[in-house]
Image (cartoon, rainbow, N blue to C red; front, side, top):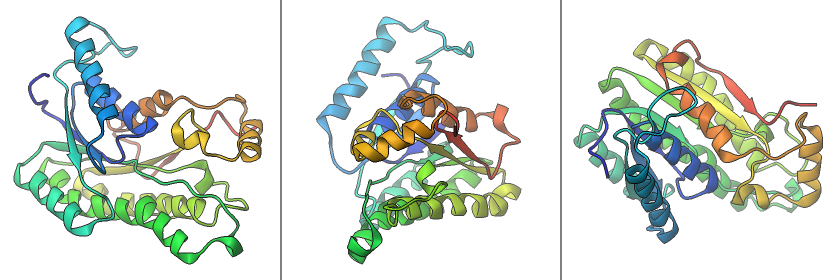
Length: 264
């Protein structure tokens, strides 16, 4: 594994399909990746080892943007439950004390939920909000100081078109994502003066584990509404997120970028 990079990104929910795509993209771009997971994960360890092996075997590979991939990137797994306040606060304190060169925060962690409101216990709604909304708020509030210390940076919240195109059966997941998108625009107005840009990406149905949990009729309707009529690949969303964290995106702030193949 390469020496620590000069720029660090914190990615929550790194074990899932989109999480891994984000880890891979930032690692390939030469970033120090702080990859949050709930607990040690053998599959994630093997995923990281496969990236390291590829770096050793193909260090001259170039991206479509002409940058050299795997140029000094490093992955650092960080284990704690996002809903465990003491564990979360301890992890963030350690990052701040180490003066990690944080330049980006990706609030990616989420749990899926579907069901009509009258058949959904409020405890279930609260559990979804704890991960999809309040954990993102807590991480952001805890790491803004570190971003400011580094002279600014970027926060990208992973929303969903379910938070934009609210429909029946989305009283928990969709509404939690709608709250996250509203938070994105509010925070963007507050932190712009500190050099911190805040944006969100709203994917449609993705070819991931969470995407496969979508009820078949609902999935078919989502694909029918998409102009491309197909699931998105997680790496396609990761590329958009990566761009939003680059200097080339310095004028983009407070935006919600749909990555759903276009609404037909």
